[in-house]
Length: 243
Image (cartoon, rainbow, N blue to C red; front, side):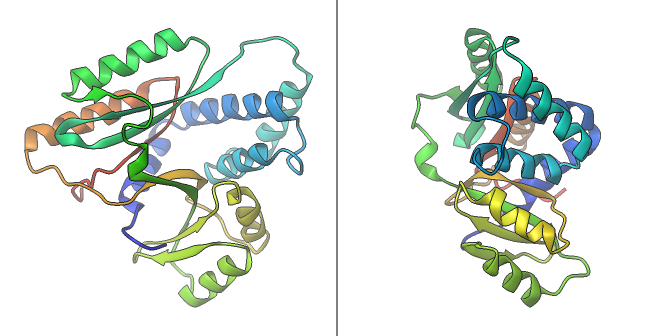
């Protein structure tokens, strides 16, 4: 993919996943249930379900769990109704942040989002306030160790990928935002496993933070968002320093 690498952001998300896998499974389960109720249990006709299944597999959710959640959601008539809400804002030093949530109480979630941004020296913005700084696309990440770059690139492009990037640690494969499930399925059939496979908001450019105090506040904002049960994904344009 053209532009910068997103590995530093994804790596941080992966570390969080390793530390709190049960929470990640819960979030993905909620997302699976929502898309099944909205579009049905058949991924061949429900494109969003196919994408979430790809995301679940990339996060090592067992196939039995995925099947069980889909069957349960398909048979449920009642239960909690979640809605998908996206928040935009600026963190410390003007870092652009997009937060994707699934919530059963939009007033609670909006209040918590506003509190987090305010507490960390940022501000929650209106719809569209930072979205223009990102491109919405599918992003598949594969660990590079032991793999030939030319082979992976050829397989990815044959599977329908739009672009390909190698940053030394991982291969980053970009697709149309609605194609990530189909492309990852083909690559999975070829034996590939994924660090990440999901629709993503990829920033056109990144920004660094020079003030150490603001770096701490930005880390705090990301931690607070990550710990909130309503938050599904967080995307930003911060060029975080190497750990």
